[in-house]
Image (cartoon, rainbow, N blue to C red; front, side, top):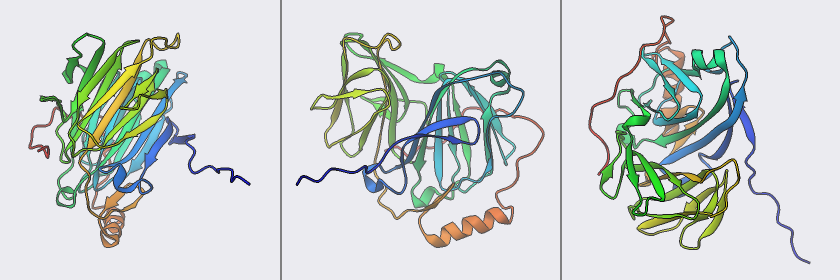
Length: 311
């Protein structure tokens, strides 16, 4: 008698705070080195929020040991932290927060967006830091949509926005400790884009919207699917000729990085290398060493200048 396969993993929507209805595509520690240096990928939306005067979002929490990358596709996100900094990002913008040695942080819908309501959609990615960088001072990068590097395929059928790392020698504006590539590709119906990819990086494709195929096998993909690609030095994404009436083409998030081959000890917003470091993180937070969020409004962070971990 044949054995009927059971469910190994199911991706359902859940709420983070009261402002972010997310689907967690992957999360540590389940995937291990296969997806390193990435720890978590959440997709929030698309959701329609009604106007309100209430604050929707996630209250104070103390990240340490990693970076968060927030990409807003619709709506607005506002954040503050215990260093006295903060800012707002809207449609097309990216916030790159390096928690590293640790801060207390909160993020909510932007005040003006909350008042008017409307569609909300975003992605948040957690990127691990190697042990040597986990104690670096926290920093922010607010990368506005007009600052990303724009590339197009030879036939004009695809537009690629390079956020961090580089593609074919074209660097994105994001400054990173961990060598990664992060990009967004929009592929027109019937078009194909093939991109060079560092062979020492893993490669992931998340389908934000549309239908098409990915990889050497031309595996069919659709909205909401995550594909992990095998070894090689390039990747290919193609959009089906016929798309849903609500999706003009295929939009995908492309991410990859060099695995961090170090032990991971993680709990909640703490991602360290040892259990003793986790314990220290708890003790530091409880002792107030990560600070508190001031109540004197939002102070925008500017672009960050500094050394990158890319090699």
